[in-house]
Amino acid sequence: MKTQRRFTQVLALIALLALGAFWAPVRSNEQPTVADMKAPRMVTGLLGLAAGQTARMSVVNWGDQPVKVEMLLLDENGKADIVRDGIVAPGQSLADEFSWPCCGVERVEVRSIVRPVDPQGRKAFDQLIGTLEIFDNETGKTTALLPYISLPPVP
Image: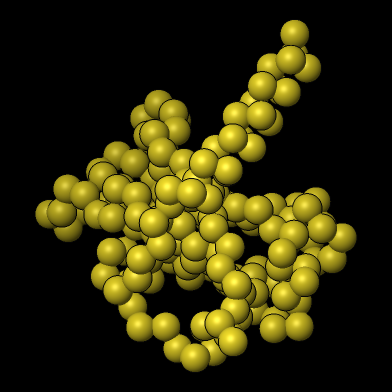
């Protein structure tokens, strides 16, 4: 019974990733630099984050080489709310969380970018899979989940 449940969860994740590749919008208000455009990157579309919710950026390395990455959580204006860098070892993951705290604003739109820090690690970067998850702080239940979409470098 436990194996069947795990299999169903894996199939659901694969279906979600495939679906996300078709419908996740990739829009940006920030002006990318030439260096940003020449590097591969993974991006998500916008998700709403309200008081009492947390955004979690996660990547897992399914490859056989460590990958040094930078993860950014941006608001709808392109302002970085979180910048996290680290090395994702093979078979390991890297994650960070951000809770919308205050400031008289009931809701903010967030998106996430993951990019390699080492330009030589591009092949290993292709072995990363990630998600941006929004969950309720009180119940812990996921309210939204977007996969990252890989964008190739611009020549």
